[in-house]
Length: 370
Image 1 (cartoon, rainbow, N blue to C red):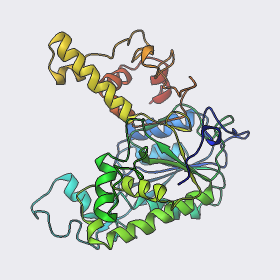
Image 2 (image 1 turned 180 degrees about the horizontal axis):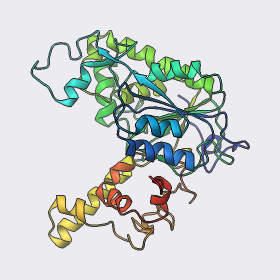
Image 3 (image 1 turned 30 degrees about the vertical axis):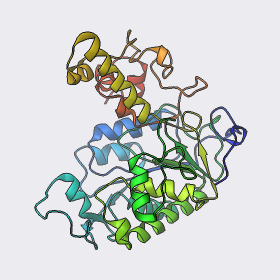
Image 4 (image 1 turned 90 degrees about the vertical axis):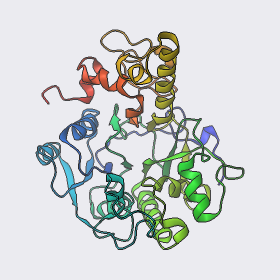
């Protein structure tokens, strides 16, 4: 795949920007089984960002209390997922039959009308079907995880990066395809070592993808086709991972199967994937307190705020170059990130700040009357 130079990247610092709002845009995700608090963070922050387009979410057949009412009030199209038995043996007969863990139950669960692929994979064809049905969804589309995503600015508002083709998003520079989540499944399935040149590359996150309507439909179909191929091959189908859609996502891009896609460096586009850097900061925080104060790792992670967290708006020091003066996460140019993914990796120091119900970021994430 041809490498993209910075002047060709349609991100925060480079490329054309949108001159119209988000009325024709669409945000989509699978959000089955969550409580209303998760929807308030995701949908609420999206609407408060100024997003005026369509929101389509896959939800459980029997949503938890308050979910249906909240989504209706926010003008969300909620599509209920019907759970069915899988039409395949999820691990090729290798797992002990008495395994009743949630992970094992998920592996044995599928979604109608796609009982031939894993339930987490089913979001790709389901969202494709719902996008095809949506007559008003003519503008750009964001397909994303729901539980660990919030919005700080309209992803498709005036001044946002213009969307041409498909945007796939790199993770923090420390994450590459050498990571087991990509290298392992691809090696087993395709016999390719994504931990070595020529395949060694920045890790792309499958949890967030942006594209035009046409490009997104093509991408979701390509993912579904490859997933069906994996399910038909015993070398590919029967690992115990629930997250191997990321391996397929990287495999398709780096082998040239998505010629209409461009890879956007982290914190330079519509999406800020915070997970790897959040984990590094959290681990460093704990190690410092273990060494400097003799604290247990669990206490260090769970009870002490991040260095520099002070005042009602701060949750981490400005010296980390991650936040502005009001605690919002920022891109490399200093502007507030539009979409923040994997915020939960900052751990309890961040969630405790939100739980304290103070500061501008909390006011944005949580409705004041909620």
